Length: 116
Length: 116
Image (tube, rainbow over all chains, first blue to last red; front, side, top):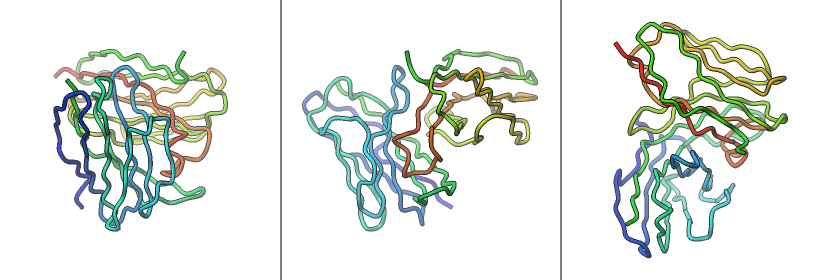
């Protein structure tokens, strides 16, 4: 079974620009979560989408936004890029089970964003 | 002080050694504990998932939770060069599933190198 794919794998942008990252989940998974990973802060949760709706949101500014399509693919957008946005952006997919049921999330390889 | 502390390493051991990886935490309400492995240029993958205190074994891996000391460990027996990766701990107060990603707190990771 194909894993989570993310495109592009590497991206270089300059301050003030915007960027769109894409994530294709594992077939059958309806939940897609996005994370930012940096050496100093580790993994930080951005948001989670389930059935095209944002279900959860982390503590990031409004410059970070996302959406999910009917085929569960998701995009993340960062507007007005800042130097501090340089990071590895990971997406993870899962079935999206609620309540007290185990729901393992599977991560993609990430998109390495460098802001100059 | 971060809620979850993890020694970044790097930790370098010879093949066949027993490896001990650790995390300490400050929130006594954490009940669910996870260990992830992240290879270079890959996303994290779930290794072990434990609830409350005690040990859990899976092949060469043993996860141990000591809630009285607020300390969790991952032991790797007969370590192999293929175990070379960054190991991340993550924990949560509530039952973990995708809908609760916002509540998952991550360590920064420990880099492990197993030398042949």
